[in-house]
Amino acid sequence: MPFTLATWNINSVRLREALVRRLLEEAAPDILCLQECKAPVDLIPREGFDALGYRHMVARGQKGYNGVAILSKLPLEEAGSDDHAGLGHARHVAARLEDGTVIHNFYVPAGGDVPDREVNEKFGQKLDYLASMRDAFHADPPKRSILVGDLNIAPREDDVWSHKQLLKVVSHTPVEVAALGETQEAGGWVDVTRKDIPEGQLYSWWSYRAKDWSAADKGRRLDHVWATPDIANAAHSSRVLRDVRGWEKPSDHAPVMATFDL
Image (tube, helix red, strand yellow):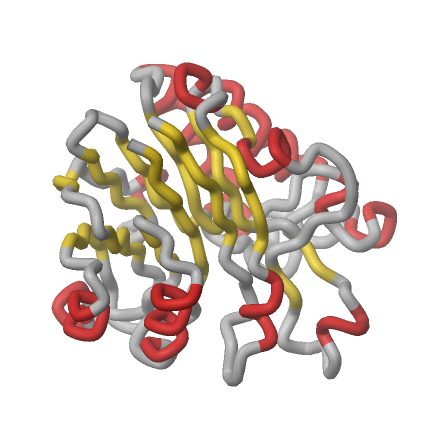
């Protein structure tokens, strides 16, 4: 059965509940994976989502910080969560569909402002988190799985507005790109978005600091959809919903979508 999946860093699900409902109505993905929900699970505003047909949810939450959730029209069951690097953060949750497909929803640490773990603890946490993900995939290679989320790294030169100017900026430094590459390789993950859109500049995040984010267009592709090789060829129609970044009081991320014919 084909289904469409979206991933979106919402930057507070309670503050932007109306935007989530608008996306569910207008884009109508079968499954929506949210990051940075910034709410305990019991305070995620489910009633409005239920009313639109998204009656299934698995989530991990924290008050005002982190948090991941998977909303679905399709029946699913919780498939666990991992506290990578032992940070005690709500950054991962997994769900299993009735056909056995597992969906992993991740929110990788942003890493702070200075790309040096000796002076910036948050950067070290980011690298440790990615290493923990890598080791977990090595130990238990995923099958029939989809991984989505805000991975907080733009790996390719055309995933950022200026490769040269961002080489020393957190999210595009060589050490981060290498760490993400090792994590991807460990699970055999296929970058579905770039499989479908192999060429050209592609972004999913634009800073709040830009007065006119669209005209400046200094974006980065921080949000990803991956799949294991056994189902990657079933994915198609990848797209970034750039217009959503221009909605009133938006998240600084735009949703990324893909359809899977499974």
